Image (tube, rainbow, N blue to C red):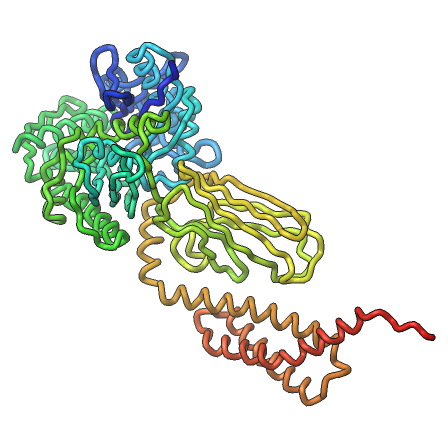
Length: 617
């Protein structure tokens, strides 16, 4: 029997593993019948890590040895993660290559190692439940996980012995699970995924496959998200609320790690309790015999989390705009945070649709991942068309960003473009790969560089550099470059060392809109100046070859036009924002027209030089 491809939801708070067969997808349970595995790991020196329920249930006893919510640090540098230091205190340290890590059990433990332990436990659960070896998996990630975070997820899987068959965005996986239970008609749905550590919003179109009866085509139209927004942030606000009440009662206090762990447990329980009740009581024992007693109401909770919910709605509005404001047929709720009445009410008010909650919001992603695994095994024929969240391109001369793959392009995808050089006799060309929506390199994010070396000497403008960007079904970007005349090739699979912060994502998107006009002006000016410099070089070279046969008046007119264009180029290079693009364009066009006679003369002399000498008779 062929070993199955299971689906894994590697979550911030809980993780699950599922499988799909002819009977449909189902979550696999552990030996005690539990489906949710807490994403908590306790590390002790000289002992095997403790994972799941045992780690979470005893976190108060081992507050410095237990790591939770490590997914929020996957693929992040230490510098990017310092604003979350209050969750880990001195345990958040700088790991390999400046990445975030945790100081625990006398060493620096990376988020990938923590995730690897969780994934290894899921593997044990799957193998026990299915009574056979299991090694292949589809693993889900937030839609707004960047290349670094996706690579960190693959690293964690490799550490735990998994072979990753596909990386799938969580909202897309949820849509796959939803598609099994819907009517056989075309629908446009929004997947609102509010989990423990991240938020995603995806707009999808699901249509029956006209070729394969009973199958569907899932096309992602747009996606938005925030990898720093989730249930953990709600818990933190509740913890701060309780600490404020404790301070009012006892004056200033410095919570110990044990107290913070107790607070975290209470916050999660209170949040869950208030999904079904109006009030919950707090009785929290602090150090030195101090006890905090008060009531915490749903109204208190709603007031605290209101701004967080509004942030999700802002992403919802942006996704709708990106998708062209389609009419929605359904809003599918995903993630434990969507159980909260305030969240569901806000989504219903925004969309006018009652949120779809028939599927378990905590299980739906794993179920969808299992469906994708079943598809990869040939069990279904559904077609999944996911998208990339931000545009991809490369730097061109003058600091401009040439976009090859645009935001929300369906994956897998590829794009090619041909470039040339602007300097004579270049022996190497550096390919600088970028991600972002702005027009200039300074406003985009660098995600990789590589060099095409060993080019033979050629004049500027002669080399033909063929560049290809290819994004596979897992969202992995490969960039290749080949110089056509010499045959030299080079390529890079982009695995950057760190990722985008939430602030960077928001800056990229918002500033791309706010500065669209000025960015296009800068890009146009830079391109005009680069092309004008190349024209000036060619004209100067041709003039040296033909000066003896050109009239003095023509040479004077040509020189004047060249000086004028050179001055405009110099001004544009000093301050592109102040340059007059129209004037630069007109001067370039005027010189091009004026130089036609020069180029014709140069061509004629070149052809005459190629004629064979006549033989004397």
